[in-house]
Length: 114
Length: 233
Image 1 (tube, rainbow over the protein chains, first blue to last red):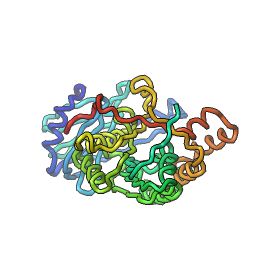
Image 2: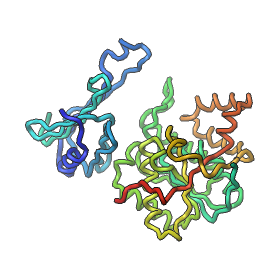
Image 3: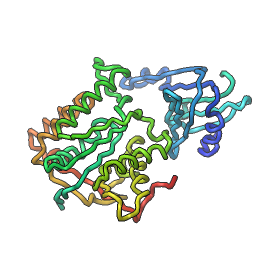
Image 4: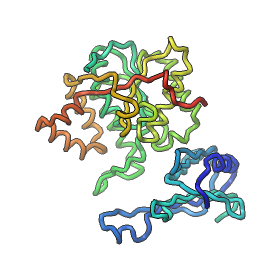
Protein backbone atom coordinates (compact mmCIF):
# COMPACT_ATOMS: atom_id res chain seq x y z
CA UNK A 1 0.00 0.00 0.00
CA UNK A 2 1.08 3.59 -0.47
CA UNK A 3 0.07 6.86 1.22
CA UNK A 4 -3.30 8.00 -0.04
CA UNK A 5 -3.39 10.17 -3.15
CA UNK A 6 -6.84 11.67 -2.75
CA UNK A 7 -7.42 12.35 -6.45
CA UNK A 8 -6.68 8.74 -7.39
CA UNK A 9 -8.95 7.38 -4.67
CA UNK A 10 -11.72 9.81 -5.63
CA UNK A 11 -11.49 8.67 -9.24
CA UNK A 12 -11.96 5.09 -8.12
CA UNK A 13 -14.83 5.94 -5.77
CA UNK A 14 -16.55 7.70 -8.68
CA UNK A 15 -16.04 4.66 -10.91
CA UNK A 16 -17.81 2.34 -8.43
CA UNK A 17 -20.75 4.72 -7.92
CA UNK A 18 -24.20 3.51 -9.02
CA UNK A 19 -22.95 -0.06 -9.42
CA UNK A 20 -23.62 -3.08 -7.27
CA UNK A 21 -20.47 -3.40 -5.17
CA UNK A 22 -19.14 -5.37 -2.21
CA UNK A 23 -17.90 -3.49 0.84
CA UNK A 24 -15.53 -4.52 3.57
CA UNK A 25 -15.50 -2.16 6.53
CA UNK A 26 -13.77 -2.64 9.85
CA UNK A 27 -12.52 -0.67 12.77
CA UNK A 28 -10.33 -2.15 15.46
CA UNK A 29 -8.24 -1.11 18.42
CA UNK A 30 -6.56 -4.49 18.35
CA UNK A 31 -7.56 -7.35 20.57
CA UNK A 32 -4.94 -6.46 23.19
CA UNK A 33 -5.63 -2.73 23.55
CA UNK A 34 -7.38 -3.10 26.88
CA UNK A 35 -4.87 -5.71 27.99
CA UNK A 36 -1.89 -3.41 27.56
CA UNK A 37 -3.73 -0.36 28.89
CA UNK A 38 -6.55 -1.21 31.28
CA UNK A 39 -7.90 2.33 31.12
CA UNK A 40 -8.39 1.97 27.35
CA UNK A 41 -11.88 0.98 26.26
CA UNK A 42 -11.62 -1.25 23.23
CA UNK A 43 -14.31 -1.21 20.57
CA UNK A 44 -14.62 -2.09 16.93
CA UNK A 45 -16.99 -3.17 14.18
CA UNK A 46 -16.70 -5.35 11.14
CA UNK A 47 -18.81 -6.01 8.08
CA UNK A 48 -17.66 -8.17 5.21
CA UNK A 49 -19.06 -8.34 1.70
CA UNK A 50 -22.02 -6.11 2.31
CA UNK A 51 -23.60 -5.84 -1.11
CA UNK A 52 -24.83 -2.36 -1.90
CA UNK A 53 -25.03 0.48 -4.37
CA UNK A 54 -24.03 4.03 -3.53
CA UNK A 55 -25.11 7.19 -5.29
CA UNK A 56 -21.90 9.08 -4.77
CA UNK A 57 -18.88 9.01 -2.54
CA UNK A 58 -16.11 11.32 -1.43
CA UNK A 59 -12.72 11.22 0.16
CA UNK A 60 -12.00 14.34 2.20
CA UNK A 61 -9.43 15.71 4.62
CA UNK A 62 -5.73 16.37 4.44
CA UNK A 63 -4.57 13.08 5.87
CA UNK A 64 -5.60 11.05 7.70
CA UNK A 65 -8.55 11.05 5.32
CA UNK A 66 -12.25 10.35 5.71
CA UNK A 67 -14.35 8.58 3.10
CA UNK A 68 -18.14 8.56 2.90
CA UNK A 69 -20.51 6.77 0.53
CA UNK A 70 -24.09 7.97 0.20
CA UNK A 71 -26.65 5.21 -0.31
CA UNK A 72 -30.23 5.82 -1.41
CA UNK A 73 -31.38 5.36 2.20
CA UNK A 74 -28.17 5.25 4.22
CA UNK A 75 -24.48 5.88 4.58
CA UNK A 76 -21.12 4.15 4.84
CA UNK A 77 -18.10 5.97 6.15
CA UNK A 78 -14.69 5.52 7.62
CA UNK A 79 -12.20 7.91 9.18
CA UNK A 80 -8.51 7.72 9.88
CA UNK A 81 -7.61 6.45 6.40
CA UNK A 82 -3.93 6.76 5.48
CA UNK A 83 -3.07 4.21 2.76
CA UNK A 84 -4.50 2.81 -0.45
CA UNK A 85 -3.90 0.25 -3.13
CA UNK A 86 -5.73 -1.76 -5.77
CA UNK A 87 -5.69 -5.54 -5.69
CA UNK A 88 -5.44 -7.89 -8.68
CA UNK A 89 -9.21 -7.70 -9.21
CA UNK A 90 -9.23 -3.90 -9.38
CA UNK A 91 -10.79 -3.57 -5.94
CA UNK A 92 -10.03 -0.41 -3.99
CA UNK A 93 -8.38 -1.05 -0.63
CA UNK A 94 -8.25 1.82 1.84
CA UNK A 95 -6.66 1.43 5.25
CA UNK A 96 -5.79 3.56 8.23
CA UNK A 97 -2.61 2.76 10.08
CA UNK A 98 -2.13 4.19 13.56
CA UNK A 99 1.01 5.94 14.79
CA UNK A 100 2.35 2.52 15.76
CA UNK A 101 1.81 1.33 12.17
CA UNK A 102 -1.00 -1.03 13.07
CA UNK A 103 -4.24 -1.22 11.12
CA UNK A 104 -7.02 0.74 12.83
CA UNK A 105 -9.61 0.96 10.08
CA UNK A 106 -10.23 -0.49 6.61
CA UNK A 107 -12.71 0.35 3.89
CA UNK A 108 -12.64 -1.69 0.70
CA UNK A 109 -14.82 -1.53 -2.37
CA UNK A 110 -15.00 -4.03 -5.24
CA UNK A 111 -17.27 -5.38 -7.91
CA UNK A 112 -16.32 -8.91 -6.83
CA UNK A 113 -16.72 -10.22 -3.28
CA UNK A 114 -13.73 -10.23 -0.94
CA UNK B 1 -14.02 45.64 24.11
CA UNK B 2 -17.72 44.84 24.68
CA UNK B 3 -20.09 45.49 21.80
CA UNK B 4 -23.81 46.23 21.83
CA UNK B 5 -26.00 43.79 19.93
CA UNK B 6 -27.43 45.64 16.92
CA UNK B 7 -31.12 45.51 16.13
CA UNK B 8 -31.75 43.15 13.23
CA UNK B 9 -34.58 42.64 10.79
CA UNK B 10 -34.38 38.82 10.76
CA UNK B 11 -31.72 36.51 12.16
CA UNK B 12 -30.94 33.16 10.54
CA UNK B 13 -28.96 30.68 12.65
CA UNK B 14 -27.43 27.67 10.87
CA UNK B 15 -25.76 24.90 12.87
CA UNK B 16 -25.46 21.16 12.31
CA UNK B 17 -26.16 19.72 15.78
CA UNK B 18 -28.77 20.21 18.48
CA UNK B 19 -26.79 21.97 21.29
CA UNK B 20 -24.44 23.84 18.91
CA UNK B 21 -26.68 26.84 19.47
CA UNK B 22 -26.73 26.50 23.25
CA UNK B 23 -23.10 27.02 24.23
CA UNK B 24 -21.94 29.91 22.10
CA UNK B 25 -24.93 31.90 20.90
CA UNK B 26 -28.10 31.20 22.90
CA UNK B 27 -27.75 34.44 24.89
CA UNK B 28 -27.47 36.44 21.67
CA UNK B 29 -30.53 34.69 20.21
CA UNK B 30 -32.52 35.32 23.40
CA UNK B 31 -31.57 39.01 23.21
CA UNK B 32 -32.82 39.30 19.62
CA UNK B 33 -36.07 37.59 20.57
CA UNK B 34 -36.59 39.88 23.57
CA UNK B 35 -36.60 42.75 21.11
CA UNK B 36 -39.15 40.97 18.96
CA UNK B 37 -36.73 40.18 16.13
CA UNK B 38 -37.71 37.01 14.28
CA UNK B 39 -35.11 34.24 14.55
CA UNK B 40 -35.03 31.16 12.33
CA UNK B 41 -32.84 28.30 13.52
CA UNK B 42 -32.02 25.76 10.82
CA UNK B 43 -30.57 22.75 12.63
CA UNK B 44 -29.18 20.48 9.96
CA UNK B 45 -29.06 17.12 11.80
CA UNK B 46 -30.41 15.54 14.98
CA UNK B 47 -26.99 14.63 16.32
CA UNK B 48 -27.72 10.98 15.60
CA UNK B 49 -24.11 9.90 16.11
CA UNK B 50 -23.62 11.43 19.54
CA UNK B 51 -21.35 9.25 21.65
CA UNK B 52 -22.90 10.17 24.95
CA UNK B 53 -25.51 7.47 25.46
CA UNK B 54 -24.95 7.14 29.20
CA UNK B 55 -23.47 4.36 31.28
CA UNK B 56 -25.76 2.70 32.15
CA UNK B 57 -27.18 3.69 28.76
CA UNK B 58 -30.26 5.92 28.65
CA UNK B 59 -30.54 5.64 24.86
CA UNK B 60 -29.59 3.47 21.93
CA UNK B 61 -28.07 4.54 18.63
CA UNK B 62 -31.64 4.29 17.27
CA UNK B 63 -33.48 6.15 20.02
CA UNK B 64 -30.98 8.98 20.40
CA UNK B 65 -32.38 11.12 17.53
CA UNK B 66 -35.86 11.25 19.14
CA UNK B 67 -34.34 12.21 22.47
CA UNK B 68 -32.22 14.93 20.92
CA UNK B 69 -35.12 16.20 18.84
CA UNK B 70 -37.22 16.68 21.97
CA UNK B 71 -34.27 18.40 23.65
CA UNK B 72 -33.81 20.71 20.67
CA UNK B 73 -37.47 21.76 20.79
CA UNK B 74 -37.17 22.42 24.51
CA UNK B 75 -33.98 24.46 24.06
CA UNK B 76 -35.62 26.51 21.31
CA UNK B 77 -38.52 27.23 23.65
CA UNK B 78 -36.12 28.28 26.41
CA UNK B 79 -34.69 31.07 24.25
CA UNK B 80 -38.02 31.77 22.55
CA UNK B 81 -37.02 30.77 18.99
CA UNK B 82 -40.30 31.06 17.11
CA UNK B 83 -39.14 29.32 13.89
CA UNK B 84 -37.18 26.09 14.43
CA UNK B 85 -36.45 24.01 11.37
CA UNK B 86 -35.01 20.50 11.41
CA UNK B 87 -33.39 20.03 8.04
CA UNK B 88 -33.21 16.23 8.02
CA UNK B 89 -29.54 15.66 7.22
CA UNK B 90 -27.54 13.07 9.13
CA UNK B 91 -24.89 13.68 11.76
CA UNK B 92 -21.28 13.16 10.63
CA UNK B 93 -22.22 13.05 6.92
CA UNK B 94 -22.37 16.73 5.96
CA UNK B 95 -18.92 16.95 4.42
CA UNK B 96 -19.80 13.99 2.20
CA UNK B 97 -23.03 15.58 0.94
CA UNK B 98 -23.13 17.20 -2.46
CA UNK B 99 -21.57 20.63 -1.79
CA UNK B 100 -23.94 22.37 -4.18
CA UNK B 101 -26.91 20.86 -2.40
CA UNK B 102 -25.52 22.12 0.92
CA UNK B 103 -25.06 25.66 -0.41
CA UNK B 104 -28.51 25.56 -2.08
CA UNK B 105 -30.09 24.65 1.23
CA UNK B 106 -28.72 27.87 2.71
CA UNK B 107 -29.52 29.88 -0.45
CA UNK B 108 -33.15 28.76 -0.25
CA UNK B 109 -33.40 29.90 3.37
CA UNK B 110 -31.87 33.27 2.49
CA UNK B 111 -34.25 33.72 -0.45
CA UNK B 112 -37.25 32.90 1.73
CA UNK B 113 -36.31 34.85 4.87
CA UNK B 114 -34.10 37.70 3.65
CA UNK B 115 -32.12 37.73 6.92
CA UNK B 116 -30.08 40.81 7.85
CA UNK B 117 -27.75 38.59 9.91
CA UNK B 118 -26.63 34.96 9.67
CA UNK B 119 -25.04 33.23 12.65
CA UNK B 120 -23.00 30.08 12.01
CA UNK B 121 -19.45 28.72 12.34
CA UNK B 122 -16.28 30.30 10.95
CA UNK B 123 -14.85 28.05 8.19
CA UNK B 124 -11.40 26.73 9.02
CA UNK B 125 -11.83 27.39 12.75
CA UNK B 126 -14.81 25.19 13.61
CA UNK B 127 -13.06 21.89 14.57
CA UNK B 128 -15.77 19.29 13.79
CA UNK B 129 -16.14 18.24 10.12
CA UNK B 130 -19.91 18.89 10.24
CA UNK B 131 -19.25 22.39 11.59
CA UNK B 132 -16.79 23.03 8.78
CA UNK B 133 -19.16 21.74 6.08
CA UNK B 134 -21.94 23.94 7.47
CA UNK B 135 -19.63 26.96 7.56
CA UNK B 136 -18.57 26.43 3.94
CA UNK B 137 -22.18 26.08 2.78
CA UNK B 138 -23.12 29.35 4.50
CA UNK B 139 -20.18 31.25 2.99
CA UNK B 140 -20.84 29.84 -0.49
CA UNK B 141 -24.54 30.70 -0.34
CA UNK B 142 -23.87 34.27 0.82
CA UNK B 143 -21.07 34.69 -1.73
CA UNK B 144 -23.58 34.09 -4.54
CA UNK B 145 -25.27 37.39 -3.62
CA UNK B 146 -23.99 40.75 -4.83
CA UNK B 147 -21.89 42.37 -2.10
CA UNK B 148 -24.43 45.06 -1.21
CA UNK B 149 -27.15 42.44 -0.71
CA UNK B 150 -25.19 40.12 1.58
CA UNK B 151 -26.45 39.66 5.13
CA UNK B 152 -23.87 40.12 7.87
CA UNK B 153 -22.06 36.92 8.84
CA UNK B 154 -21.30 36.61 12.55
CA UNK B 155 -19.41 33.40 13.06
CA UNK B 156 -18.27 31.25 15.96
CA UNK B 157 -14.64 30.07 16.02
CA UNK B 158 -13.06 27.85 18.63
CA UNK B 159 -10.16 25.97 17.00
CA UNK B 160 -6.95 25.99 19.03
CA UNK B 161 -5.29 28.24 16.44
CA UNK B 162 -8.10 30.84 16.44
CA UNK B 163 -6.20 33.47 18.45
CA UNK B 164 -3.02 32.97 16.46
CA UNK B 165 -4.52 32.85 12.96
CA UNK B 166 -7.83 34.71 13.14
CA UNK B 167 -7.14 37.10 15.99
CA UNK B 168 -9.52 38.37 18.65
CA UNK B 169 -13.29 38.32 18.02
CA UNK B 170 -14.55 41.66 16.71
CA UNK B 171 -17.87 41.21 18.54
CA UNK B 172 -18.13 40.34 22.23
CA UNK B 173 -21.59 40.51 23.80
CA UNK B 174 -22.44 40.50 27.47
CA UNK B 175 -25.54 38.29 27.77
CA UNK B 176 -25.80 38.28 31.57
CA UNK B 177 -29.33 39.70 31.52
CA UNK B 178 -30.57 36.60 29.65
CA UNK B 179 -28.31 34.19 31.53
CA UNK B 180 -31.22 32.23 33.00
CA UNK B 181 -32.59 31.55 29.52
CA UNK B 182 -29.15 30.49 28.33
CA UNK B 183 -28.75 28.08 31.24
CA UNK B 184 -32.23 26.69 30.50
CA UNK B 185 -31.18 26.08 26.87
CA UNK B 186 -28.05 24.27 28.07
CA UNK B 187 -30.10 22.21 30.51
CA UNK B 188 -32.58 21.31 27.76
CA UNK B 189 -29.79 19.37 26.01
CA UNK B 190 -29.27 17.34 29.15
CA UNK B 191 -28.35 14.07 27.37
CA UNK B 192 -25.23 15.72 25.99
CA UNK B 193 -24.49 18.36 28.64
CA UNK B 194 -25.11 16.63 31.97
CA UNK B 195 -21.48 16.28 33.04
CA UNK B 196 -20.36 19.62 31.73
CA UNK B 197 -23.34 21.38 33.35
CA UNK B 198 -22.59 19.92 36.75
CA UNK B 199 -19.11 21.37 36.53
CA UNK B 200 -20.28 24.74 35.12
CA UNK B 201 -22.99 25.18 37.74
CA UNK B 202 -20.53 24.37 40.52
CA UNK B 203 -18.01 26.89 39.18
CA UNK B 204 -20.67 29.56 38.62
CA UNK B 205 -21.85 29.12 42.21
CA UNK B 206 -18.24 29.72 43.30
CA UNK B 207 -18.12 32.79 41.04
CA UNK B 208 -15.14 31.30 39.18
CA UNK B 209 -13.97 34.14 36.96
CA UNK B 210 -13.03 32.11 33.86
CA UNK B 211 -16.37 30.25 33.89
CA UNK B 212 -18.44 33.40 34.44
CA UNK B 213 -16.63 34.98 31.50
CA UNK B 214 -17.08 31.90 29.30
CA UNK B 215 -20.83 31.76 29.93
CA UNK B 216 -21.79 35.42 30.09
CA UNK B 217 -19.78 36.65 27.10
CA UNK B 218 -20.55 35.45 23.57
CA UNK B 219 -17.93 35.98 20.89
CA UNK B 220 -18.29 36.34 17.15
CA UNK B 221 -15.96 36.96 14.23
CA UNK B 222 -17.35 38.82 11.22
CA UNK B 223 -16.48 36.93 8.06
CA UNK B 224 -13.47 38.41 6.28
CA UNK B 225 -14.45 38.53 2.64
CA UNK B 226 -11.02 40.00 1.85
CA UNK B 227 -9.45 36.75 3.11
CA UNK B 228 -12.05 34.28 1.81
CA UNK B 229 -10.50 30.80 1.83
CA UNK B 230 -13.63 28.76 1.02
CA UNK B 231 -13.11 27.10 -2.36
CA UNK B 232 -15.34 27.73 -5.36
CA UNK B 233 -17.50 24.79 -6.47
